[in-house]
Image (cartoon, rainbow, N blue to C red):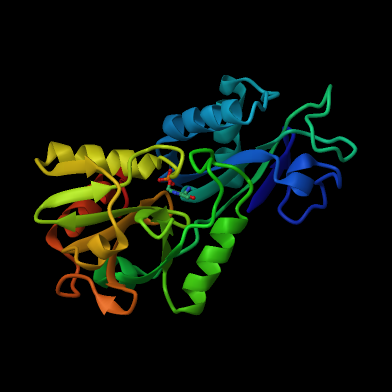
Length: 280
Ligand code: PMP
């Protein structure tokens, strides 16, 4: 694994983050996670597009051009010597004595890591994983891929402590938004439901790819908020994400989803997604 900061490649454990980096002190920044498979990034353009949108939303002005960032991503993959890798990339608003408001004359800093992808047990992809539903206590700009992840961290920790793969989040006790770090889908009577891409969810790159594939295959996809009860009564539930891929959820709040087996639509979309990204 390698690290990088401000255009320089460094050892993964090098002590290089300035104490007064605003990412460090305020979580004042945005990020992306991008996979490489067989020496090629998967949906690099879509991730860099979203990173630009995230920067725009928090009024962070990148200090490298889009082309420079893209070239740097390719350079990192080459220098890492890896064919399959996970790139973590973040912009922070830069380094300055601590004040809440944007400091003048501060240059944004790009940093991150490139390392082997974390391995999700194949058994979970094959037979399905467990999830819990808990209140969504995050802020109201979930469409920004912000460094402020405390809401997601606390949610995921509850899931892990419950022996689950993911926490599926419920806003205002009324409707499901998404997973702590994935998008969520429910299937009922051959129709696929997922939350609309507004400020309450992160519009996942994988979500868009999977929705397009589902439509191409002739399924109806509805971007509508549905209740936690709807999820409990669904025929199938699954998650999508860059590292999550298409993950079947077969046990939700300790009860089987549908017949408790991976459903046909989830399985089909999982296989089609793997084909698209060239995963073997
Ligand atoms: N929602 C949230 C809150 C996430 O953190 C992620 C993972 N980045 C996703 C959805 C999935 O997005 P993507 O498919 O772009 O990885």
